[in-house]
Length: 415
Image (cartoon, rainbow, N blue to C red):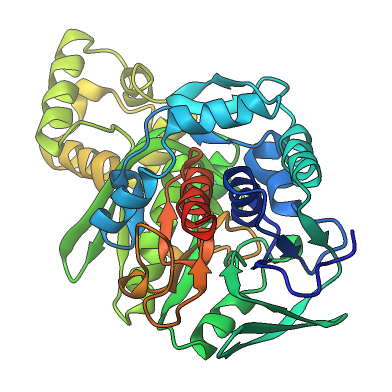
């Protein structure tokens, strides 16, 4: 569509947050002209690849406790702008009905992320939003009467500007982190960024992950910094040829990266018997060996672990899986229990932004009004979605942040 010579609202970034902001603004006030800019000829690439190309739209249970980065009070207030039931209803009106899966994840009934993107693009068209693809924004500037936005194709002006530029994750989708430079140029502080929801890489000389590649099981990961436990997370762990993936490793990655960014030396321990302490596992192993005196260690452990994991852990402890459990010395048994409950994973880093699903860090939320998403530093500037220093755990929470922050901004923009 041809753009308005001077739209009321100019939105940079046609991802989830940008599309939602445009839609909500026009729904709330059709008299306001909205132009949406994106560097890609076909916006929404990150929506298409999300959730294994099925798009995990949101989660049944969402609260500020599912997020890291910004202040909990700030996040809580933004989430109230569009609750989960509101989100489900909004997508239903667009013809996208959702169903619940494991851990409360909500996916489209069609299991096609393309349907989610098409619904958003279709609603933008129906509402008369001007969408300009292949308009890569190179610079923004503040003037007395609004903003000027320089793109690869033209220069546009608007009274109000929305940065919905995303972060640095999945750069192939167009997330280049340019929004941070725009926000900084307009007076904002940028919290240094790191990958989030990224697989963890282990030392290539480690035998555990190479022998267990493809094996998945529940585990508990604990991050230690300066000898103190910083955070403990539980969930499914997937061993890979390069290290660890799966929900628990992806959720832990941002904490590892943040600790490393601070110049500290983080360590990560793995408990393959999640929910059980050293004493509980030691007691269980003694009782199991007494009840089955001829059983091998792997046979005993096979009742709570995949056999391959049991074999790998016994080898790490310096005992053989074929060793009869009842004949294990006290020291050998306690060494095994320590390995089962606190094996130190030789993490060397994450797989970076290329494989990350989100970005930790971004525009500091201290200078953002949680009720309107407007900048307290640069009036008329609004920031939504991943460009802010807020990142959610795996399970649809980052999409919900996009929808909720977009709604909060749209409510203000429409007035």
